[in-house]
Each structure stands twice: as C-alpha cells, then as structure tokens.
Image (cartoon, rainbow over all chains, first blue to last red):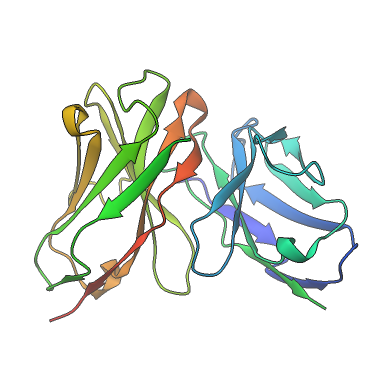
Length: 107
Length: 120
C-alpha cells in the first residue's frame, strides 16, 4: 500500500492568513493526488483533484501543487468557513489511501 | 446535481453481516465515466477506502477488506450496495458512498454518511 503523511497534523491560524499543508506519498504517484475538506459531522468535500485542478464551485483561494511524492495545498487568505480538517488522498493505486488529516482551527 | 443517500441498519451484531445501500439521484448510474464506491470513517479517526464498482459490475476492493466485502449494483433501481461480513467492533464507523470519477479516481460527490455501530 502507498502510505500518505501530512504535516502539520494541526495548525492554528487567523482569518486572512496564508495556510500551507503538505502531503507526502511513500512512492511516486505522479499527479494522482486529491484534497478534501471535512467539517464536523459532514461528509468530505472535494477541493482539488489531480494535484492542482480546482473542483467546480470551490473558491479560487484554494490551490494545489506538486507531483511525484510531495504535494501542497494552499489557502491564500483563510476565511471563517475554512476552519475544518483537510485530507489528501492518492488515487494512483489500489487501495486509494488517505492521509491522516490536518485540522485547521482558529488562533 | 447528483445526490447520493445511504440507507441501512445503524446497529449490527458482532459476527453478522453489515448491509448498506446507496441510492443515486440526479444523474446516471450507468455512465461509463464513473465508478461508485464506499469509504468509511471510525469515530474520531481518518478515512478508509473500501472499494468501487463500475456499472458493468467490475469491482475493486481494498485488499485489507477484500475477503469480507461485496459491492453490487442494481442499475434499474439506481442503487449500489455494500456487504461486509463477520463484523467486529473495529468495523464501527460512519460509512459513506461516493461517486468516483473515471481513471483519475477522485471522489466528487458524497452521501451524507450513515453511522453503523457493531455491538451485541
């Protein structure tokens, strides 16, 4: 199985801050990397697919980059509705594993 | 707008079989562009991909669960189903169904999730 790690596991930030979350795969996954946002009691929501493609309807303050084993999710200016947990997922090979998540909360 | 809705028992006894159904509305379950899958999340923990099914019936399972999992599809009812046998307390989780886009395998639409507790 491909192992996914994320850093940091949690962070505190203020509205308007630029936030960066890193995801690393245990082997190369090309650009088969997706990012999801999950709020308490809700299903995950797709933000970014194929490493850098913005899902329809997702604000442009979210962006993704990377390829191979190292990837980044950036929120350019954190908004109140962005406080949530963020997961990366590799969709390169079965099983399609998720990272452990990064919780973003209010400073 | 595609919508998915999980249904099934919220309580299952140990050693029995967990059965859930996902009903798809607002879109075609027989589209060649998508797979239909299941993901679970134990309380307070991360996400685990369980498996996918294509409209043709082809299935893809997480090897760690493969011996206990069956996913099936009923196109006439626009439903796909999950069966997980020989459950234990470790299978207690919120179970989500989701649409998977083609060969890129990203999950673009999710159901709201349903909590299944394994307990006697």
